[in-house]
Image (tube, rainbow, N blue to C red):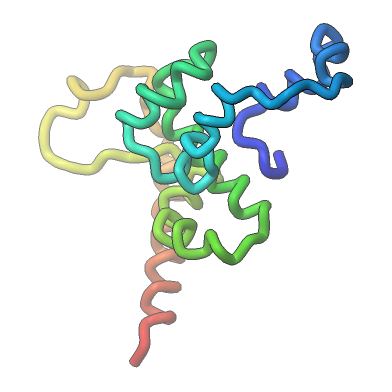
Length: 150
């Protein structure tokens, strides 16, 4: 994946139909340059639903509007792959959630209420996933306790 956020950019580069354009020295696109900050990796990592719907999704309409979590997860991976310490703080602030997503653990909602009304059958979580999430949370909590100053 490297520093890519979505596979579509790689597809654009290798698509035979795009090769004539990719091999030309084309002028900069002012419209795209004006939107570049909206797609900065740290912005994608911490974006609100409003930012996603208003600024990201209109440019990537072919990707489901429901994929904000995937964008955030991929932005975290790309930032980590950059190896730039300038992003350490923003990554640390979102580390726990992104570690779980990166490990393939689906979020689990714990709380009162009737979960069968809040979630459909396709959203079921296997016990192995619950256990995996619990183990990750346990390790994260241990690391937090161990790293606290005395």
